[in-house]
Length: 123
Image (cartoon, rainbow, N blue to C red):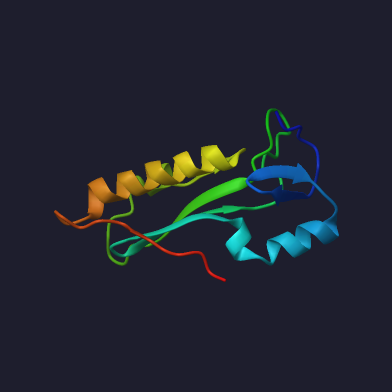
């Protein structure tokens, strides 16, 4: 289990590791390395990325280093969208959170037969 309390984190493969600010900055500038998943669903995008900073501000429990956010929506009623967003401690948790957000949006907003589109990692 990862310890909390480090200010900066980097990725070694899909595993978070504490690091210095220089290593964090180099990693942070590489979106393809940080991107867990990016999915388009109608007018929405679900983005899950590695933040590299601990967003567990209580410092109790594991560090929260990954984040899923939903963008877009146009004129759609956004009630329940906060249920799609979240922060995670591990890559695996982030992938699972991303899948839950995509499933929710698909059920709520996709037309019959419409499927989410996985976006390739940006270079």
